[in-house]
Image (cartoon, rainbow, N blue to C red; front, side, top):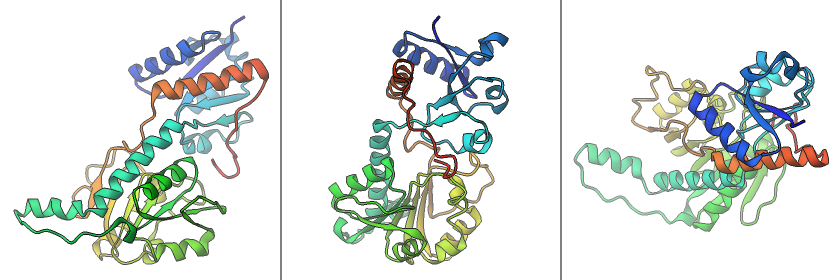
Length: 314
């Protein structure tokens, strides 16, 4: 009997069909279906599910579930709603995602490095003025988060001549990158960095990390790029830091609530650049291949992919 694997999601119909069709072509020995297609008997037999922002009520109906495979890298929603359940959670680890993120980090670091926000304002004011040039080696970039995405982004910045440091919860070693770890070293790094790039996951330890106390430690006039998670930033404290010039500019791609509320003051602030969560979109073909390979390996060898540490949240 072919294994039946439901795709449990809260996506649009078209998005769900794209995922199901693509994974099915890669996983020909299984049947991939919508949760709504499962019978009561099926729900008592399913051991693996593929998920994208799943409804916890649906997941809870699968009494024999052993593990779920997310098609996304971020798992904070599942950790909030599903971490108490006995099955394992596997998040997407996609080298293509790291490359895509490193491309976005480089692009928006260059945007700030080459003073594009000021040139944008000069255009609006019909003002012709050439600003002085800074060599990349004289620009200190700090990446918060040195997982797969952070390491790839750090090395791409190094390749483009920037002076790069990184911070992580535990000590890391990356060639040509000064690595910091722990709360005290975070304060030390913030005081030095010209551009801070956040790639941290959302965990209890990072929720609201970027608050007033955080911004008070930042080098005056530094800029922020947030490509991690919106809830790591306290919006009111960020606005205060921008208003008083502690931060010169903020490039924001993620927000605590998405879409960003139309009344948010971030929209109209002269020192923000807002993006609609586009820094590193998941590639359905490459992600589907990874999901299919992991499930095939489990079915043939019983080898479970590395799962999320529920205590740490990632």
